[in-house]
Image 1 (tube, protein in one colour):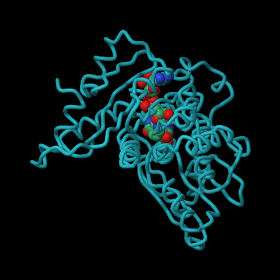
Image 2 (cartoon, protein in one colour; image 1 turned 30 degrees about the horizontal axis):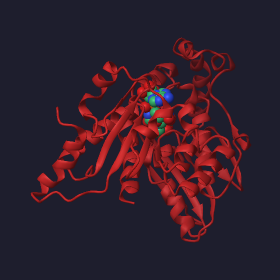
Image 3 (cartoon, protein in one colour; image 1 turned 60 degrees about the vertical axis):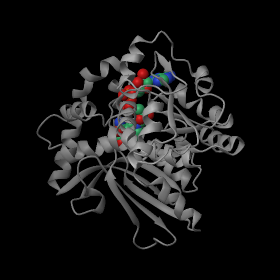
Length: 371
Ligand SMILES: NC(=O)C1=CN([C@@H]2O[C@H](COP(=O)(O)OP(=O)(O)OC[C@H]3O[C@@H](n4cnc5c(N)ncnc54)[C@H](O)[C@@H]3O)[C@@H](O)[C@H]2O)C=CC1
Ligand SMILES: N[C@@H](CC=O)C(=O)O
């Protein structure tokens, strides 16, 4: 495609409707991260070119950890990988706001797993840039960072699109917020919050090595860039904190009791040594599987918030337990509130994967763009 994103995205909807173009409010986007999730964001934006969804959106800046490209009129969507590879411009977080221009709505889309990027969210929000993120590090770690985002949104009159941080965009956060907006207290949450761990325990058969399944989940794009983030329960801790805080429980991260699947020796390794060490998981997981199997039970990695206390870990559940169901990367989350007191509200669906995550992020972009 040789047309710029701006040309394509602005012209197509009007052409499709066969009507004169209507001036759409300008919305400038910066995409940080072009890995598993960021690439899917680009693909979805490309697929929108012949629809009205992207009307008014201009992707003005794209960066990975090394390089960046900026085009005030819009980056050519299908040429991003080549353009980045050829770009002489380094990737600098200090440049992002300037590359988005000074007028219209400006949205930073964070598709990285970078703590350095997450640490910028509050500053951008305070400075009038909206942020849409799949990264849990700003809202799912220290309580001070969570509060900084809240305060910055209020100060900058900006929005934080965090739908994709839990359940890869499943309507979890928005349901909890809707319940509270309707006057309910959320009293408890229990569920499978990790798509990769759901996939692992839906596929692991106790016969083939667990490490092989971990590699498959990683190669399918379900795990974090470092799969120990998932296996240690840290990713689930962050998700539970995000849900709990949205539900009104302002928990500090160390109050969540997390039981890790990662042996100490593997936890201590550098990232490049992790793959070779994955077989360290095989014997302990085979033993856990065999014990559960003997009792007719299934292993599920469960997060619970009950009586204001939070915990995360592997549980052996009766095969007919509601949380033992599901397939693939399904997250399954039960939410109890004043109105869902005896029977919880249950939300289930794919909880990891580039496509659903990118879709959840772009839902937030469209909502913010619409004002
Ligand atoms: N894979 C999944 O199913 C889901 C992932 N997420 C989250 O999405 C985020 C991204 O995950 P992946 O795409 O799997 O990671 P990835 O490792 O495939 O890609 C990360 C990208 O971020 C870039 N990056 C790193 N530091 C940067 C910086 N300072 N400036 C600009 N770019 C930078 C890297 O160059 C790379 O392009 C993570 O926070 C993850 O937790 C959330 C929901 C589901
Ligand atoms: N690694 C995560 C991806 C989404 O947040 C998971 O497995 O759920």
